[in-house]
Length: 54
Image (tube, rainbow, N blue to C red; front, side):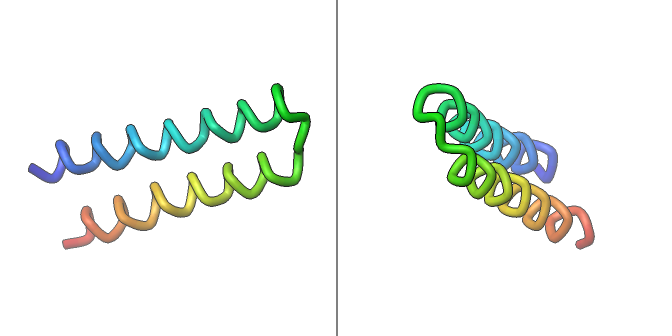
């Protein structure tokens, strides 16, 4: 069950990360892209670490 939850968390993190790439390429907005990438990394790693530490 933990691995299924990790997969879903990774899917949402990938979607957020790809939105950051879209911001970088289409909108040419580097600062917003960096913020979205940072949000994607933090919001993916923290729940996975908390889930696996239990």
